[in-house]
Length: 229
Ligand code: AMP
Image (cartoon, rainbow, N blue to C red):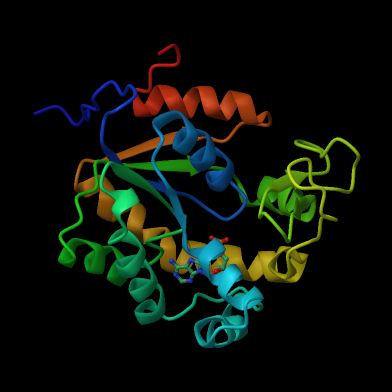
C-alpha cells in the first residue's frame, strides 16, 4: 500500500482537525492563523493561552511562569487540562488547528484518549541556525498577540502593532539563551512525535521559506486548500 496520505481538497465549510508541528520559530503560528482565517476554524495555541493566563496572573499562569521563562515545557497535566477544556467549546465542532500542542508523546496519547480525531499533522521544518536568527528579530503585541519580525514581517511604523497600535515587545523566551534551551527541549522531547504521527500515516512536511507567503503557498498546497474559492 502506498505511504501517500490522501487529504481531501478543502473548501469553505469542510471540517478539518489539524496539528501544526515544528520547532519554535518555524512560523507555525503565522501559518496557523492564515489557515484558520481561510477555513474559518479556530487556532488553539497553548503558548498563547499560557501567556494570557500569565498576563492575567491566574493560578495556572503563575504556575506555568517558572517553566516558560526558562524555555522548559509546562507539565503535561496542566497543558492537557487546558486543551481538554478548550476543545469542548462549541466553536471547535467544525474543526480546529492546534498550534504548539501536543509537544510530548504523553500529550499526543492524551488527545487520543479524549477521542479527538486528527486528520493531518503539518510539520514546518527549519534549521536551528535560521531559527535563532528569526527568533532574535521577533516582536509581539502585548495587547492583541499579533506577531512581527523586524526583517521578514515588520510593522508599518517599525515599533507599534498594525492591528491595535500597542507598543511591540520582545518575548522573554525569545532571548538567545532561552531559544537555545527551547531548541534542546524541542529536539529531545517534541521531535519524537514526528515519528509517532508518521507511523499513523497522517504526517505532511513543508520547508519553511524566507518569505511568509512562500511558506503559505506550500502549506495550503500540502493541506489541499483551494486558494480560489
Ligand atoms: P509557544 O508559544 O508555543 O512557543 O509556547 C511558549 C511556551 O509555553 C513553551 O516554551 C512552553 O514553556 C509552554 N508551552 C506551550 N505549549 C506547551 C505544551 N504543549 N506543552 C508544554 N509546554 C508548553
